[in-house]
Length: 504
Image (tube, rainbow, N blue to C red; front, side):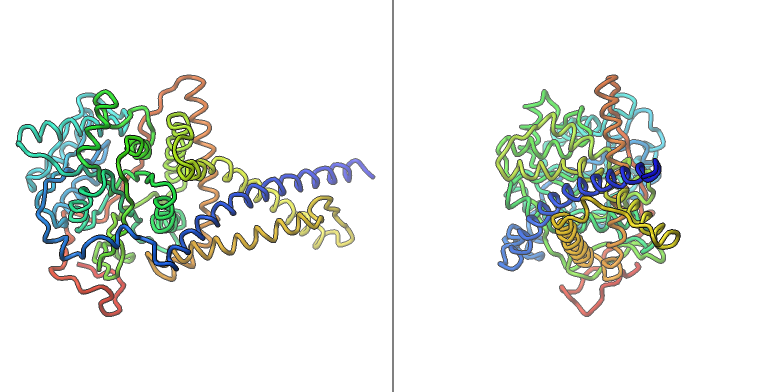
């Protein structure tokens, strides 16, 4: 055997080992995913899915409940391009007269301050909270300052907010959201409603990826998580805390409800609410209309379909913006979450903590699988086109157990793609359901880059002591000057066959 042949044989053996390591990790992760899938579909068959939302009254009853004051927190750092549109459009849309917006803005962000003042000139329920130092610090710091202003406002106005709601500057809020929170805050101390991406074009692979992931996560995963663990992670958007819960959190954390050291303050606070013994709920409450945008014109409109009351927003459409955002999530959920919360909680909570954190292992494993598959494909193509007499010997992949392992993973892949298509189709349409398959591959690369960045940033933080600062995402918004108005009497659920977005 020549030196070149010996090297090739050793390299093929190395590729086989890499392929099998990846295959074993992927198989273990797939069994985990299968368990959650089966738990969800079993509950659907038995009619126990969305049990909490089924216990709630009909929309017309919600509409008639006496309104109580609700505070909406909107933390900002350089959001001058979107914040006026967000405030003006939601002020027009929300069917709730006692809503108050508290917008946190830093001293060194005059452009955002100007835009908030423009909105204040039109709507008296908008209050600007000047964070008394330069930014960016952390989103948690901005939220804590906003909460202080909310309590000061209560004292001055001699009122008390029934609930405190979290939203971001890119959110288009469902008109019924506060009506729903008005009822739910008497039942639970923390409520999370679904969050979905606006519809994007079929060619927008990365932004379309968010459509798929949030459709599945906020239809299936959070529902199963609720039943098995009772701890609902906060998405930081379309989330409501009772005033009592916020007060207890502040008392336990030296006057600050949100931990300023946390990169994902929303995820962190939901666990602390649970540790205090408060009740949490994920509610997918069906309404007879939703809000989305027209792909062609970009104009907002009413979607006449029975869908859950949910916030819609734009997510990143570029690769770098997407993986930087996901890296921030990983930093908070995986690294800081493990440090702050460890593995506390019930068996169900521990199980979902594993699911939250497994991405730092599975994402590199998928890339190893792609690397090995690319090499094996190159070997066979070389043999096929350039040296048909060459025979490559696979010492490991030819074994029966290895063949079965890859067969099992192939079945899991088909199952995974089928589920992703179903959930995307539930919220969007058949075209996007079909596109969710190639977007799944794109997502694997985005997640790998995010994992690499998160590990690098966290190690740098631990080694050098470099502080973790607010690595915000640039935002866009579909509504300008509050163009969108809600029809006075939306049709009943399933009215006609209209599922398109009607431009207003």
